[in-house]
Amino acid sequence: MKPKNLILAVVIVALVGLGPWWSTQPTATIPVKTAEVAAPAPVMVEAPKQVAPPTIAAPIAPPVAQPAPAPQPVAADLAIDGAQAELNAAFDDIATMIQAGDFEGVSEKYATPTALAKIEQIPQERQAAKKQAMQQMMSSPQGQQMKQVMTQKFQSLKNQTPEMNASGDEATYQLKATADLLPPGTAIPPPRPIGFVKIDGRWYAKNSDDLP
Image (cartoon, rainbow, N blue to C red; front, side):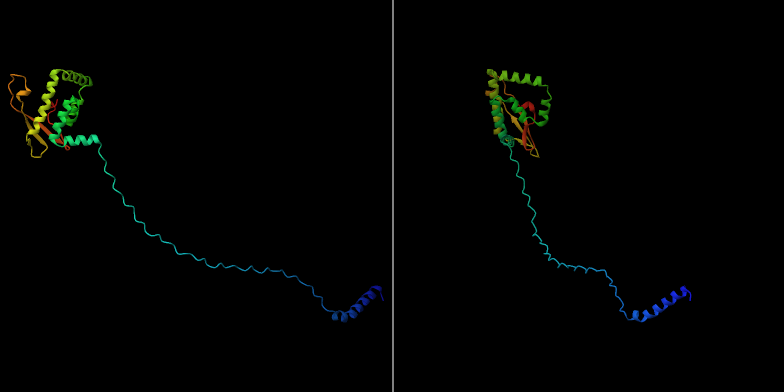
């Protein structure tokens, strides 16, 4: 027998002899690691929050606007309104200003707004010269007598009842000259009308020439 065939026969015999033994051995179990799956974390369910019902504020009444106090006129305005609101008071006021030599003040107060606007258009130099001449004249004896005449002229109007127009805003007086107010031997002139008009509640001389 050839050596090659002899080796093959030995191997076959060995396998046949080991077959019953191999079949009786327990099968080895290879442990298989399973992937550990982490258990899901418990889900925390929050309890519903207790929401307080909205607080409704009580309605607030709107502030009541207080009426603004009426502006109080200054003392000077009260004096002007008091004098010019009534004719007899105006005559007393004019007479007092004449006695004080305040002829410029008489014109500024009792000339109508239209007449006063015309006076203000006169150049300042002419107004200053006229004022200076009036002051010089009134400081003389003749000027003092003239002041008395003009004072009595306006005071005499208080004893008359004027003729009023239909709307009641124009009064006409009759200015009468008396012998004691005229130079000796002078004939007494006939009465002449002198008028006053009411504008915005104030009385003014209708003709500025009737003022000193």
